[in-house]
Length: 248
Image (cartoon, rainbow, N blue to C red; front, side, top):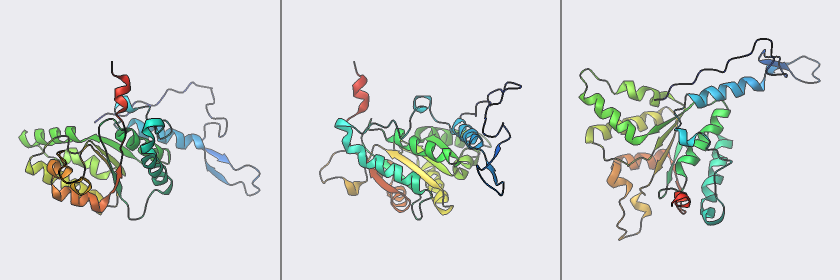
């Protein structure tokens, strides 16, 4: 997992925030009772630290809800973008502990999930990005390592307020690893924590008969998909592969 970058150096004698003179507190304007509140710069600094600690891949560091493209041929993604905005605005959503963003490659599932988490981190909510294939590989290494404990890997994922589990189903797990992933999802659900997942594979209930494509059940099992149905809203993301725009 990535480590947080160091805080920027302050220049002695230079005031960085004119609202609070770098005290972290400011008085409400025209308030006879002299009510003092936390300054906006404190919230911005906390959000910056949360982003640095969130393990967001470098290629997605600039991804936001604002720059998510749902125009032209990608207009079919407007619903997913609208849902994402409403989810952020109403967070924490009662009874809805996450979402599974489902669609073909290149439709922007990871971008949208990271955009959601960044908006929540701006509100002071901690988030973390985890690649599903990386998680499986780390768990397998712990199995093979003498004295290894999968809890060293899982603990931060069990505790963070919002977790992105990206590209679920990308690898076929062993039965033991699948049980561990199920435990992770169950525990987060029971704690009332939010989990955002992305997948290229669809729930078999959403596929037409005779469709030859692999289903999510074939990649992660019916038990995991059943839990996802209970804890997540399934958000379809259908559109052209934006990566094709950069193909030679």
